[in-house]
Length: 58
Image 1: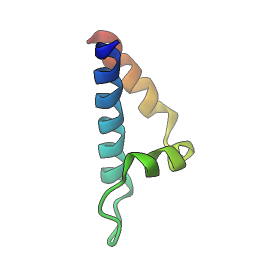
Image 2: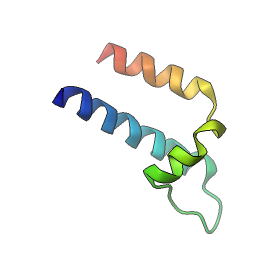
Image 3: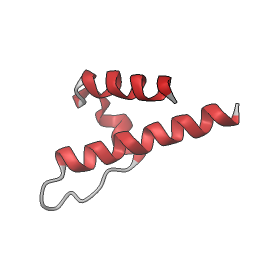
């Protein structure tokens, strides 16, 4: 169970970092996990496909 929590935490950190890099504009410097949850529909599905492949190989 702890392994799954660690993996999900890492996955969320990767997604938040992706959002920071992709959508960072002037005043918006970072996204919180809460902001990610609220805006998850704006993320290209390919991001999740890539992350699934990466975590499946870990």
